[in-house]
Image (cartoon, rainbow over the protein chains, first blue to last red):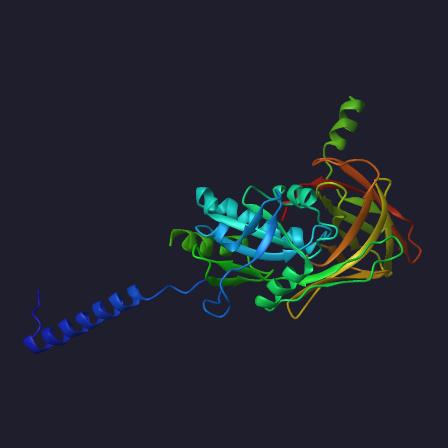
Length: 201
Length: 142
């Protein structure tokens, strides 16, 4: 084998050494998230609502799980079930790790979403889905906290009405700190990958 | 033999339905519990030379069906009622989750996953109404 002159060997050694230091530094750095990282940009999870089984709950009841917060209503035939179906698929892809996740479906239509109907609705999507209901005062405070809006249309002659609501899914870590934001367009596989990382923290 | 063939046909709900120049396919309904309004989806292809307009839908399984479009504006989701949608020659109209959908109100009987529901699509532009079989799918269907 052809031997490198001593000076060349020193240079080669320096290059390898620098590369190793750089690799170590990158290894320490957080890998970017697939979903939008909103760490520190929104307040911690906080609410006082009634769970679909009738129990009063607060955010503290969900500490220790990765919590996903979504505002919707059961009389929504298209976007709400589409979002929940996508989250259900993401949870399915997580396998047993899904047990560490809760999807909090907060009704923005408490007049029609009674606790029993909310219970039946969320159970349709999976055991990790939780329905939450509260008075408008609490809803207003909670939506304001996460800078989203909702609004109810005037009822038609048959009393039917629609509700506008946010497409955002806010994702909190096991300590209730806000971490990620998913909108309606994220794929289940993308959501599953980030939820796995959060569940493993 | 004929009986077996008819039975076999009944077991293949995904067969496209053709009426003149129009073909409807992948028609399904997302099942939600109780008597919640349901979303209906399908694809309608206009293989003819004239534009056709979809003007509404009805079904013996629902007291009312409206056509709606989900609209996302500044992160806020809402639905707009639509009364007619034109389908140009050689194009397909997609009723798919997150966009156009049939909003199906007040079931006349209970539904379960796997059921088939007949839906009549009303058309204008010289086209007779078209009856399409929609398959009832679970809430978690993508």
